Amino acid sequence: MSVDRITRVNELLKREIGDLLFKVMHADEFDLASVTITRVATAKDLREARVYVSILGHEAERPHMLALLSRRHGEFQRRINKDITLKYTPRLTFELDTSVEEGDHVLAILAKLETSTPAS
Image 1 (cartoon, rainbow, N blue to C red):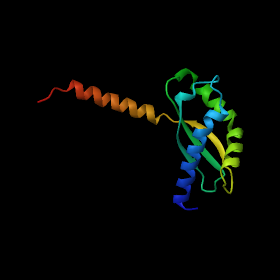
Image 2: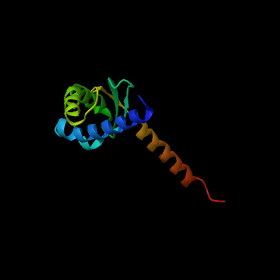
Image 3: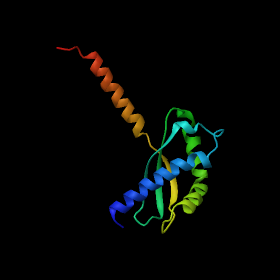
């Protein structure tokens, strides 16, 4: 399968899973506003897809939140199968993505260095 097609499938799944978050997960389970689907990595045969999730704040609750998402992977897959026509509906696995927080940390360090360096 071409790289272009995999990229398009990844973006389509990312958008669909992001929309489904509010339909599948309940607001009383955890803070839906803190969860972002950052990217999806689909296998070339479309049988598996890793969904990378960023959870801002809630450091202590992250494992629980990821477990809730993983527990509902079947519901996500059923709805994707209903909404999107693919040869195979990939089996979803959710993984924590800390790249957004790492980027924020680097930007904070750069901002601190910028303010502490005197202008010549």
